[in-house]
Amino acid sequence: MYLDDRRPTITPALAFRVAVLGGIAFLMFSVIFFRLWYLQVLSGDRYVAEANDNRVRDIKVQAPRGQIVDREGRALVDNRTALAVKVTPAELPKPGAAQDDLYGRLGDVLRRSPRRIREDVDEQLAAVPFSAATVKQDVDLPVVQYLLENGDDFPGVTVERVFLRRYPYDEVGAHLFGTVGEVTKEQLDEDDYSGAEMGDRVGQSGVEATYDSYLRGRNGATRVQVDAMGTLTGSLSAKQPRAGRQLRLGVDLKVQRTGHEALGEGRRGAFVVMDVKDGEVRALGSTPSYDPNLFAKSIKQSDYDRLSDPLKGNPLSNRAIQSLYPTGSTFKLITATAGLEGGLIDPDTPISDPGSLNVGGTVFKNAGGAVNGVIALRQALSVSSDVFFYKLGLEANGEGDGLGIQRWARRLGFGRKTGIDLPNELPGLVPSPKWRAKANREGIGDGRPWSSGDNINLSVGQGDLQANPLQLAVAYATVANGGRVVTPHLGKRIEDADGRVLQELPSRGRRRVDIEPEHRDAILDGLRSAASESGGTSADVFKGFPIPVAGKTGTAEKGLGRPDQSWYVALAPYPNPRYVVAVTDEAGGFGAETAAPAARRILASLFDVRGQEKKVVKGDSRTF
Image (cartoon, rainbow, N blue to C red; front, side, top):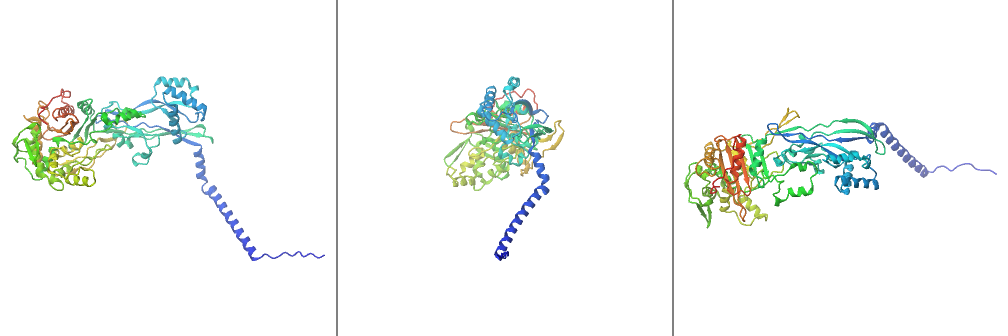
């Protein structure tokens, strides 16, 4: 039988399918080949490095913050070493009964909730898995000794020395120096906290925050090796931490302490001492104050609630730059400047003061019903005639900026931030017809239009005016120095630990306003008369004081049965002042009764007038 062994020929369709399948196979092979070539040849070094990183970890070593010193080099803020109880992750028992028992025993010794200990440890280890997690800072020595003596009962628990911030003068200067706290997630994204890591303690308020990048320093690290299971197998190297830089302030510790004492315990108020020529702040304080040492470690919520309670005076608030008040008669310097520079009066223009002014049926009176007769500017400032300035306010009232008072208030620094190197300063408010109209349109006003009475109230620092002691100090400094609107500043320079200068901190730019020399002299003469001549509102307070002072009292009426607020602003030495001192007491009554005596004590300390720092002089209660 014959067999035909011939095969059928491949059809075109079959050949096409074979070609397509072969092409796909070739393409897949090429992709795999080039991927392997990329991984092994081109990226080999990078993956070797990553593999090494998988078995090498850096454990952070905390850097101490730099000191803060006053102008004479006296330490205002420094560090202290403390003992912290920590948990080492490599030796910590695995989650389960053994770990629960450890946290329970640790909670009994440290007097903390085991649940809270677990939450804190888990949170820290999630952020930095191989670093020891802090359970409690600043632990007493007997507790540490107990933990060390019973180490077998506390596996993974270690004790380390840490640096904690120390504020040796407690409440003195607290608002100025500020506080530290653990960096937040939001702050990590800010340029001001560049280089900070989770768990770092950074400045949160005061100059601690403003100059944090200098004070913080640079953390060190201990490089360790771990196996594939994450178990520590040895140490490789160590990088020592670098301490933060030293910050020197222009503050005088002696004056700062005197200001704190002069306001008195239990009072609510603030004070500022500043160089009128360059804006260097010699002292700045607010009461009630607080102890910033509470923030050196984790502050209790109950303590924070107490310090921010308005019913307890909100001690965390810096009244020198954040609280906003009517300023009473201390504002008359601004009204006088506006009247002189606006051409409403000259230094010798006589104005009658019969004791009251009737405007549309509303009677505006002098304090205490005083009648001063016909007077000019110098005497009006000396006796603090309200009617004299009421008439200026009435004449200056009009559209826009009130024909001068509002405009000059803004030029002299009201209604804007001063630019001091402290965070969270508030700008305040200069009321005007435009402001009132806008507030009414936005539904936040009282609905009534601006009236002449509003401008009359503003002329003596009453009504809707909102200002703080620092703004008042800047305004008085501007008139005293002839028209330079200084920018207040605390920082002088950055130094190393031995006090060698590394960087001068430049003063910020200053604006200039034009004030005629004869107008400036007339205002200062009136303020000098107020503090030195019979009938002057603060003459009794400064009687016998060896430094010639020019000053102005202020009494801000708050109504609703609340006590009047006491103000005083002093310039010294007259006639070419070097310093301005502004003091306020929220419930101090007449300016000559509380604020002026406090200013005298501060000036005595500033000029080192012996025997005057503790002297308290009561002024005439009829004056303000």
